[in-house]
Length: 428
Ligand code: UDX
Ligand code: UDX
Image (cartoon, rainbow, N blue to C red; front, side, top):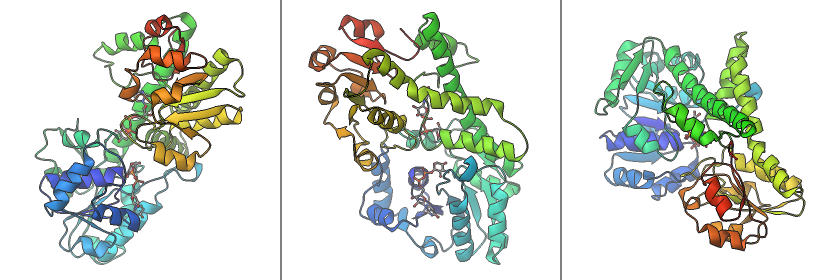
């Protein structure tokens, strides 16, 4: 089989499918990326992925190429996992998906099941079918939607132990053929009889999770005003089986390559079909404001930002990844720098990428170095190594002992006990 796109999703999918015993060729237009992979280097950080790629590459089950023709011949499946960036007006830009489908059509040599894993709005499957049908061989292809639900940082675990596998196609036989790929995993498989339903499951899921985050962030705003503790409120809510405990962490809002773009794309799609998605717009507005909450709290504690030294703990959009796409850190740093503050930061994985996009930040060697001499520290990403610091050592090294905990990783009472001026999100 061929997997098109060696990004987070494509490479994880390819390595996992190879590990399940399949012969997988990874095709990517980016020569540098393919060269790196051939030199045994995974171009981004994802726990366990290097080892998985290496094992399957050495076993001959995984190959890397920039040429579609090399991926076949005889491939039965082609999986499209190219990026679907935000296009004009918020709708997903499908030009890479189209380009991948065209290249697949041009080198198909037999009946092929084309699987769409990229996050694409309903009706994209039809577009892919139309592209394929432009060639003689392409007429024999079937298109299947099989959305991914991989979280960065736990992508392999999510692939191998999914809550569910969703497969949709107008061609039932093709959908069942895709289900075979997952037959060794213990997971419910939902086959939907039309492709649009499967495509919509992905958007529905991501929009719902984003809505949960904005919901708990709104509750946190109210908690602050009435003197309740949002972390405990979420715990109490989550014990209700109908609600459940996950995705109820109030913080600085959601980032990453999926939620921001998918909610926007779903809203834009709805508008195109003359429906005004009130709730989705509120989800996005709350998320935008939430990013700035830590800056408001800094202003409240420091009075002025001009000339202050602010240390950021974490830069990646979430822990266990080096991904900075839509990371709140970028906007927070920009606003602080514009206000005349000096910004310094430490992140265990994302500093190299950050240096390229935010050269005005001073990059430090660890949490203690970031705090030493600073007027305030902001917890931006909840990496484990920030949770268990020697707080006495940290406090005595700071110029002013202000900690704005954007991820609620510290206990307010313990922080106050150490003499910090402490502000969490939705808690005193
Ligand atoms: C994934 C999904 O595919 C996307 O739909 C979802 O919304 C976010 O997650 P991701 O794997 O994170 O995207 O994207 P990225 O890391 O940017 O990788 C995409 C790869 O596709 C890149 O390596 C790029 O070079 C490759 N690509 C892009 C092609 O091979 N062909 C193209 O025409 C365009
Ligand atoms: C997400 C989806 O979870 C995954 O199923 C999909 O396929 C791709 O998009 P990912 O973007 O890797 O995965 O990260 P996720 O762990 O879902 O977190 C997204 C964002 O929400 C992060 O910025 C995180 O900090 C934030 N978040 C998450 C919260 O603010 N509170 C929470 O309770 C959970």
